[in-house]
Image 1 (cartoon, rainbow, N blue to C red):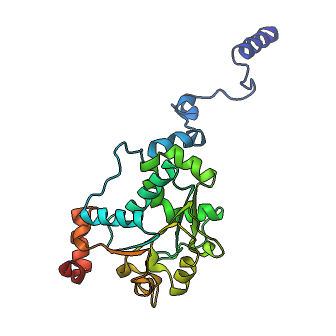
Image 2 (cartoon, one colour; image 1 turned 30 degrees about the vertical axis):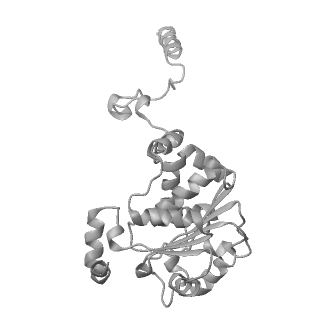
Image 3 (spheres, rainbow, N blue to C red; image 1 turned 45 degrees about the vertical axis):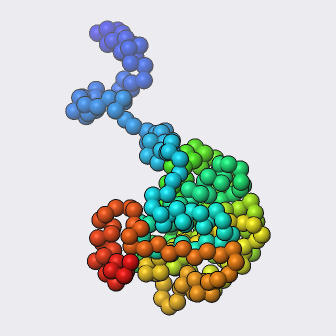
Length: 271
């Protein structure tokens, strides 16, 4: 009897080498009805998911959608400093980022700098985890989508890793000099203070390209903002162009026009 039981154990070990012979047999109820093929390793799929979710590159050449955008694009190409002011959805950020991508791809510039004040829209996010670049990434995601569309996600990732595309908070601009090989975009400029705007403007070197965008009506700071202050102080200077988008220039959607009409009726009715 003992020899027969031992022989059965040896045969069981040969058939199931990784199974503990002294453990209780696992029932279908305990093991569950799913096999190992249904287990997904999320980490191994990250790269694939990033490629799937990333904005795909557009094969269409960059073109203005409205006469106002065409004037704005020509102003950026012809002037050292361009200020784009107007309501949401007019294409201020898209036009600036698309022109920067075009200049980088053609070799006219060597680096794109994206910056904005780290100001939350009405709520405090607290301390965000990660490095400074990771903390600031949430503020600059919209630009990354535009660059992905114009350059391709792979090219954008490569340029970010090698310092060809730099995203940094406005506070980190102090002490820098923007030269002729740089295209700089300051977005959400209505959230800068006059002192911050002065600091940023005095970074401009010879023959560089600087674009400042914002909507004075959507300022999230108290007191005067740097965008309206700069608009008044820089008016009439050579190599500076101030472009105003109107309510009729909104291209994001018809619903956005209706929303702004309800929130800012004086803006919509005077345009």
